[in-house]
Image (cartoon, rainbow, N blue to C red; front, side, top):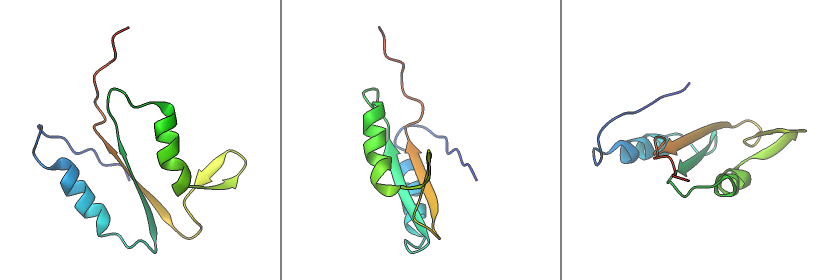
Length: 83
């Protein structure tokens, strides 16, 4: 299921989502929070996701067996870098 939470700056969107994710039991879910900024690069994303995911098959990654993954992507709408 995908959820998009919209709102102005400082309205508590991130705190609300973090609180909700913390209610899921860690024994059944693997949670990852990705906070983007204009300087976020591919390696930063890889370094955040890598330790939380295991190789299931060639080219397929996922959480530990018998777990589901929760991913919070914070600040999805970041400004485009000027060249």
